[in-house]
Length: 245
Ligand SMILES: Nc1ncnc2c1ncn2[C@@H]1O[C@H](COP(=O)(O)OP(=O)(O)O)[C@@H](O)[C@H]1O
Ligand SMILES: [Mg+2]
Image (cartoon, rainbow, N blue to C red; front, top):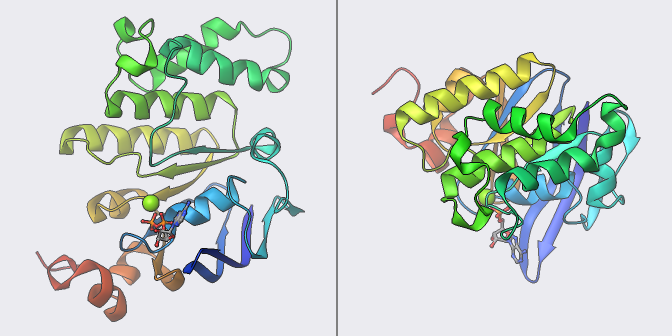
């Protein structure tokens, strides 16, 4: 479904990505992990068109999307939630999601009631009803992450990019969010998720890719990655290695 081919990106003197190859197959849930600053958000921003790579290519469903603007990439079926939560702060949460439903109106056909769809999506991501009519700026970061997820889903993506969606959640909330991501995946949406908590990665992902200093260090099943010596050394630390406590 998605292929990143030898993608490189520098910011000033910082090389954020060095010839990264990464692929995601239809219906997978792929985890993207690595230390802070290893380039995880940068690659998601390049896939979604927010940044352009210095070199390399992004293919989505066999089409070269490298040079397309974010709104075109979104129309083609890639949606993202950002690590730094973004919203239209003066609009209500409902209007935030409605905007995304209307953006994707063509995908829904003529019969859709956009307002009903927006409410259904906010219900689906678990935002309490009384928050629907509040301006987005009145919500806390965790609630805004839910709104972002609803907004991403509203665009009817084939591929969903989630950048630290679960950060800041309690273990119970995090378990609920894992179930939500599984449910989204069962509905036929492929997922690429950046996540730090290995328990979440283990419970959710078919495959894990580890970035380190902008390079791919390792990839494979969660078990394989957790047992990789290099990954344990640079990222996990011994105590997190699979099979130990
Ligand atoms: N917009 C930007 N301007 C300058 N430097 C950036 C920008 N975005 C990312 N970087 C740098 O690129 C590197 C990778 O960052 P990032 O992709 O955010 O890492 P991660 O998400 O893995 O923590 C870091 O050194 C970061 O400071
Ligand atoms: Mg990041």
